[in-house]
Image: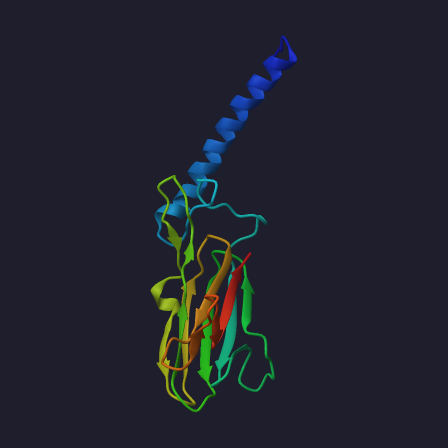
Length: 179
C-alpha cells in the first residue's frame, strides 16, 4: 500500500479505527442484549477494561445484626466487599449469624448510554437471597454481569439499613466490585 501524504495515512488509520471499533462493538453488543450488561457513559456497550473475564469463584458471606463479612462464620473477617471478575460464575453461600432475619439484595448499576443497551446493569435475580432466619444458610449460583464496576448489596428488611441525609446507606451494606 502506498500512501501519498501524512493526511492519507491519517485518513486510512481513521477507517481502520472505525472498522475495529465496529467489530469491537459487535463483539460486546452480545453482552448488551442479554440483560446482564449495560452501556458505558460514552454511549457504547460495556467493554472489559482489564481483558480478563469469566471463570468460577466460590464465596462465603456472613450477615450479623450489624454487618456483612466475607468469609465463613468463624473466619473473623470484617471485610464487607467482594472483588471478582466480570462474567464469573459465582457460587455464593450466605449465613445469618445474627439474632433476627436478614436477606441479600444486590442493587443495579446505572449504565447511561445512547446505543440501545440497557439503562442499568443488574445481577440476575437468582443472586439475591431471601430472608434467612438466625442460624440458616442459603447457597446460590449465578453469572455476574459483564458490566464492570461496583454493585452495592444490602439487607433490605426493616431496621437493617438507613438512608442518611446525604443519600448514603448505612447498616447492613457491602459491595460486589466487578473488575
